Length: 107
Length: 158
Image 1 (tube, rainbow over the protein chains, first blue to last red):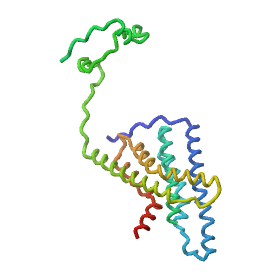
Image 2: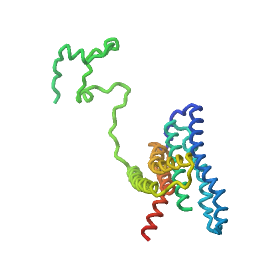
Image 3: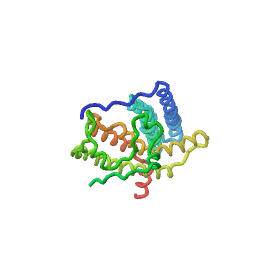
């Protein structure tokens, strides 16, 4: 089989925007906390004399991952039914939360 | 062996009717037996039911891969449930606390959601379905490694 299955009827534009906005807000929280940590933690490490131990990789990844996962959810949900979009956005948000804890533990 | 249908009394007959059946040309009681479908001739122009073809080796491999990843994702879920017990909120503000708890909940359901999303996005008929599904599940398995619990277990073993 090589034919692409027909995509479900797209939800109205208003619903699409509302859904994207809700998940943008929730993903934005994780981006906000990661950015705050990236700004606040290095000076704290430096003040204690441990500047060389600053976990730059996890700090930067913490900021990069939330928008990447949100954009991926937006991309994979395009042209899909509302329920599928909700599922894909929820998976992206949940993965954002999980990675934020992973970086917290690794950092 | 088909037996003759038993005659129906009037009360039974009435119970098997809906109002307006006569108007729609459905005067007969709505009784059906297993033999009816076999005896009834196929309506013109409608395709008859075809037997389900056996699964191809590629389909079996896809199914096996999906099940294998399902086990991995289940392990990830258990790992995140343990991780949530290990983590504690490092600050005092209410909104942060609420979002921390919400994040812990999301972490625990993340493997299940990713698995469901991967399956939903690769329905039957998707071009290169197996490759896409396996790549999606592999990416999720790597992204959702429960590091807090993993580090704790590694630390407690060494």
